[in-house]
Amino acid sequence: QTNLIINSDGRMTTSLNGSWQIIIDPYESGYYNFRYQPRSDGYFKNYRPASKSELVEYAFDDSQTLRVPGDWNSQNEMLFYYEGTIWYKKSFDYDLKENRRLFVYFGAANYHAIVYLNGKKLGEHIGGFTPFCFEITNLIKAQDNFLILKVDNRRHREGVPTSNTDWWNYGGITRRVNLIETPSTYICDYKIQIENNSTPQIKGWILLDGANKEQTVRLSIKEASVSQEITTNSDGYGAFSISAAMLELWSPEKPFLNKVEIKAETDRIEDRIGFRTITTQGDQILLNGKPVFLRGISVHEEPLGREGRAYSVEDAIKIFDQVKELGCNFVRLAHYPHNEFMLQQADRMGIMVWAEIPVYWTILWENQNTYDNAQTQLWEMITRDKNRASVIIWSVANETPRGDARMKFLTRLITKAREMDDSRLISAATEITHKDGYNVIDDPLIEHMDVIGVNEYHGWYGGKPADTPNIKWKSVYNKPLIMTEFGGGAKYGHHGSKEERWTEEYQEYLYQQQLKMLSQIPYLRGMSPWILKDFRSPRRLLPEIQDFWNRKGLLSENGERKKAFFVMQNFYQSMSLKD
Image (cartoon, rainbow, N blue to C red; front, side, top):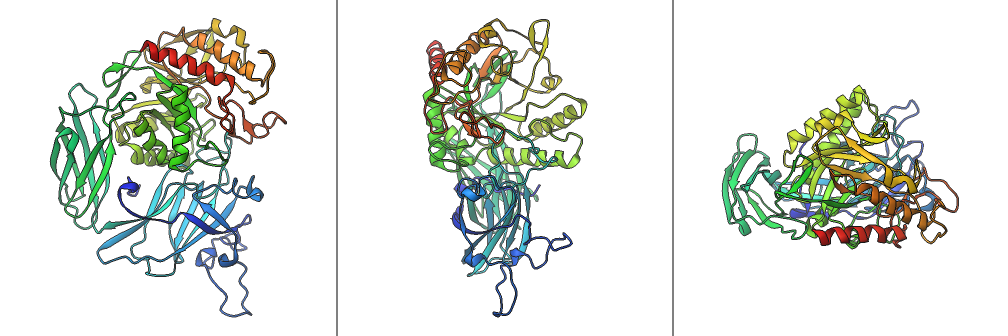
């Protein structure tokens, strides 16, 4: 992978957010010629007719616009179901001084983005939920630059996720776009965390990029009385391990963030970083050496108060305000990496995070390109978020059917995650088997994981709520269990008996019965029921009830609280009183 600039908020940036001109191109006329080869005179050239007699069949200048960041589905009714290519164009001026560098940074674009500046191709990116950037130092002009993206959100069998999912396929430049200016040699990446042992030891590395890679870099953490010089080598890399006896640890009760300064000879950057340990011991999860129960909820990246994808600080705060109201100290960010404001707010608000890549359901396990795609998304997620204290678990998959090819695929991802970051736990959401009247946790993948994740829907997809407390559980592993999904659907305001599907009363009763069952599992160390709020899904078709909404939310799509919300809230509040 190429270097990915992290902590864009700590750098000199210029926003390219706002109104972008677009061309909707379902036949990809602006990219392919009639023989289906990429065109050399495509829309990325932004060509204008030299005379009134010249034939040019597109024009950005007269086209409609879309807001960036933002998905196209919720901005334009005509694009609600659209899957295909849309071209985006943004014009801007930029005066770049000598001995400075300039990058264009995208928070995410779904799904396949090809990027051009001033008619020259910068590169491509595949994956709808992770950041990417390109250097544009040698292409930038003082005036009249035009940045053009071909964004294609079509689903693919060999993709990650694959063609079949249970969430809306929001297309477009869904997260922010920034120009990032740096010195000629700059701090491009760093990892600063503490080792998982009893004596606080800050360990990590700093990476410089540019011609002057061998430098003396000073790392300062004032609150912890840390000041250390680090020498980078000819690759720009400098590792360190520093004793930090004065370090105050991060926790949900006190989410303390240190002001961290990295000062090289040619660059300087600040970050706010929390320090905590997260380990397991037998079937316990230990935060800062003490047992913790993860009182959680699953969350999709949809905002409260409007439709579409969430992308802003305000979206993150609204979501986490409801999470805290529910009584949670933990969220499962499903089923893909969420925008970086979510992780920043989790750090600030003291919410532990399960972060996941969209290796989901029936991935093509034997396809090398599919694996490479998954590993790249894992690399981009960990690279971006490795300094966020709130992230305690990297998840490599959700509900994947067992088999040798799947086992090889996922264990390779687990190995990669551990190579990149040994300061967090590894998991995946697995499925169970049923033997001799027991729900048996026996997925062989768990052997390679630190924490067990299990999805189960007794009382919704099988069995009756009344029978749920009688279900018995057995695990073949001495590891902590997080029940990563459970629940059922209800439409807000739809009332009836507790035996009637889709009523709030049915969902309420199901949650009551589920909690009775879960409370009997001695090695249960957390839960993240499905899900905080109703979310868009093209799989959910029942008229007058679903209408393209997955109705398993504890909140409606508008944020109204269903009866089951208060069941979970009371359960978590009683747990916190015991703590």
